[in-house]
Picture 1 (cartoon, rainbow, N blue to C red):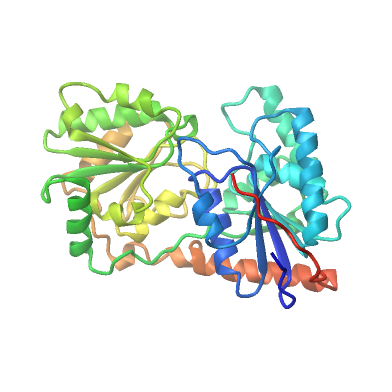
Picture 2: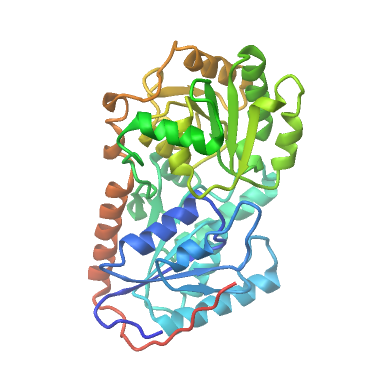
Length: 403
């Protein structure tokens, strides 16, 4: 593969190309900034039950696999990953190395030590999370502090993510930029009635039944216990309601067992991974989003863009998106009774209803969405290249390795 001579090269590095928000933003940056930059995407080989985005990524840019870049901590393998990334950086000679996710962020920034590339790291959500033992959490914080010293710009996807980093003394305020995730805030179809009809037909749902939807990964972060409890309470109370859960993950069977009650199990649908999820939101009357931590959730933005109210846990990145009682509700993480109560209000017509009005979501483009994100990334890259003083020489030949 010959490198074009007329555009600066940008190498994006991420740990895994599974179905997830950070991965989608990375792929969309590669695709939608390719008019101005020669994009390369480097990832580890791991995939999972959450679904793979390798094919989608390859459609937008060359995808290079670093075999030793894995999510799990393994000092020998991590050292090999540094060497692999260092070789790729030397071959590609990017003007900018842009890392995503905690593991790839640390490994990738170490790999740039002998490079003249400017370095960007996006924090889609901090790698130190509430479910980790204190020692492990502090280790990650320490590594992030060290990596921040080799970072020209730290991109936080929400103000809360930035504030958390500064509280932890990760980087300095002048290094941070708040740039949202790359999410299209335009609805899939302007005609909501037609979208709803088609979405419910695709899911085999009656056009008249009330439907609560959930979209995500079945993982500990997404609080499956609260998901099960809230959905169970709604279906026991509202005998006509249906629940549709879109996605997959390691804890899917746990959730399936939790919702296997004969009293309502026939009213629960598990769709698995769906790549047409934007077309399915219109089937829902409300989207349920229990979670324990976030950066800036794609699901909430997508649901609101499709004019569906959301009941979400109030965690980082959610309070700016949801206006209580106007386009949904915010409740305390883990409060399944509050989730159920708010969902039932919406299903019974006592809260915001689909389709949401334009006024209910008019605040979003000023603080979220792909238009703002792409503009901000262009400005950031341009400022880094101006400071760098030169761009890469168009001399490399790099082979694409696929999993």
